[in-house]
Image (cartoon, rainbow, N blue to C red):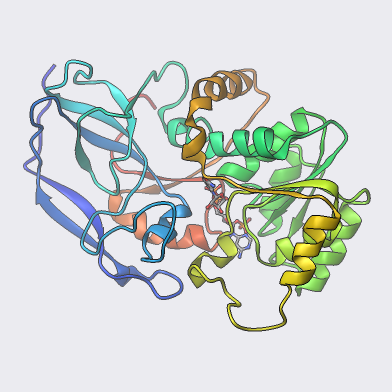
Length: 355
Ligand code: NDP
């Protein structure tokens, strides 16, 4: 099979390091010559680009678990693509793949670490969503670090998002009481009616942190055994006083503070809460476990088999928020950081022939 290959491709590069919330001028759309795959390489066109909160961290220079994107370099990102030219015997034209092509319409790969996808097993877009990186984050964070037990209470923020929606559903399937926290009445209704959560609190409607604390206390009459930390901010403040003895806090993300940089929103201000915080960890014998999902990719096959089966059986559902065209990625990403997405945020970069 041969495919006509355009002479140019598009990409979005980091134009400037954001100060606080990213703005449109921090990104630049460029048209560049189409790369030619060398020996052992293939060329793919991007179908789906995944937008994820971690990308905000890559825009900063501060020390982290991964290097920052250089100014002028394409933004990083996981993608689903179709091979359109290949000099690699393991990948043929027409194969669908999951790779880190970045915010680009096309990319060359040597095939290392690339997952081949079977579109008859699951829709292609799920490879960067519920059956991809965010999905395994929920699965490992809950099971390995949360260690759930029937009858316990779990709280999760960003409850209708890519990670939170699966955390809550998997916890419900294991017999836990699940309390979600989400932004807006529609998201909260979806969490209860479609995802099956017991209750969902609207953090944007709570007029102050105290109000959310009060709602959280009445939503968790037996305290909280697992706080799946996705957001931090006032959700963390509301949950922390309710954590039970031997409680677990898988620390997955803290999106409320991402735009504040590595030191957090309140660095250098306000009372020092560290002694009280540290003492609670000791007195309540808490397990607070930070984790980065790429350390756990050995669990990918088990995860895909288990969660893929639950989706096929209709026991797990998922939602996608799709923005059209590569040029829409910066706007969609800026909205994601503010809760403008409803479900897994994707960019439809080019046609998905399997839809
Ligand atoms: P989501 O699809 O959940 O999208 C982000 C959501 O965060 C928004 O929709 C919004 O939901 C919520 N949010 C934004 N600002 C705030 C705020 N100030 N307070 C509370 N909620 C806020 O994203 P993901 O599911 O992809 O990611 C969820 C978390 O998991 C992130 O922190 C991410 O960094 C982390 N993560 C960590 C990984 C790891 O390896 N440790 C891997 C993957 C993700 P709403 O409108 O409901 O407020």
